[in-house]
Amino acid sequence: MFSVSPAEMVTIAVVALLVFGPQRLPEIARKIGKVVREVTQAAQELRSGLERELDEARKPLDDIRHKLGATLDEPTDQIEPTDDAEDAEDAEGTET
Image (tube, rainbow, N blue to C red; front, side, top):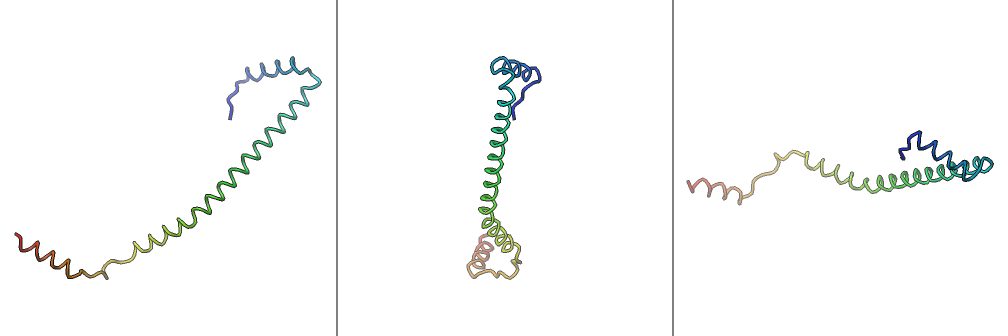
């Protein structure tokens, strides 16, 4: 998520040690770890909830796509030309 080099981590640790002192530093580190864990868990729950909602929204679309695919796969040799189509073919043949 964040790209922090080892030198930057050492600098942050030294500054935190100087600012908070050695007694409070472990307590602060635990609190930071807890917050990061809670934020990560909340983000994971949000992501899984959104994926569930998207899957539910996709189901009707997939059903329609499946029905359209089945309709398009049906043979078209059963379709017979109408009289209008035959008249148009005759008109094209007489124009030349």
